[in-house]
Amino acid sequence: MPSIRGSESFVSLLLIVTVCQAQYDGFFGGGYFGFQRPVSAVVDIKGTTKFPGVSGQFHFTQTTTGGPVIVRGTIQGLTPGLHGVHIHQFGNLSDNCNAAGPHFNPFNKDHGDVGHHVRHVGDLGNVDSMGDSFADIFLFDHLISLSSKSDRSVLHRALVIHEKADDLGLGNHADSKKTGNSGSRVACGIITLTPSRIPFFF
Ligand SMILES: *[C@@H]1O[C@H](CO)[C@@H](O)[C@H](O)[C@H]1NC(C)=O
Ligand SMILES: [Cu+2]
Ligand SMILES: [Zn+2]
Image (cartoon, rainbow, N blue to C red; front, side):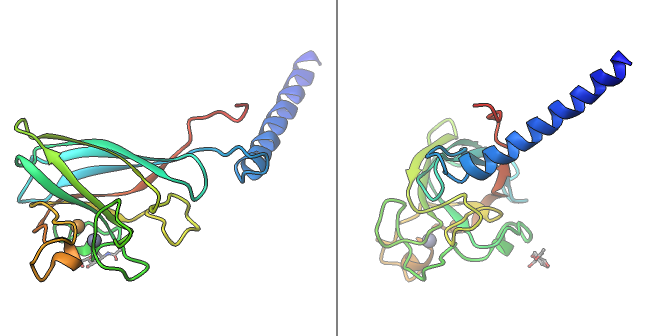
């Protein structure tokens, strides 16, 4: 008998935990009490067949729904110098990243830099690969979002690293206002949600 009672209380406890979790997601997660669960995403970046030595990982964190996103990460194996970084429209890495399509540009703007007023939502500027071919990125962006309901959502889209520097829309080349004239695609990956590591009782 005591063991049956024990398992009943365990089931009840599980039920309470589940309900609390749902409440947390519904009320806290939705900002009901002014506190929201951070959303994070990750992208594993892999080189194309021509650039097999390129690899890296970027992390995205958004602490409030629709709020700014922190992007941080590292990438290695690039040639020294600047390399354009963009989020492209489609989460399809086929054909050496070319199936990812154009820069993610839901508002039909010209190409620019991450901090510019005129830019594609997917424009994240450049990463600077130093002599040791190791590059890191750390930026804070108000335009991209990890909220799946947002028209600025970058979830399930492709992050692409380019062969050359992005001219940030300021060059004379015909492609400057379209792609930043940053050359071919060297590496890419799909931006994927990661489960929140914050337990329900926090
Ligand atoms: C990805 O792109 C390739 C090449 O363009 C195409 O054949 C394939 O159907 C695409 N996959 C999806 C899921 O759209
Ligand atoms: Cu690109
Ligand atoms: Zn662009």
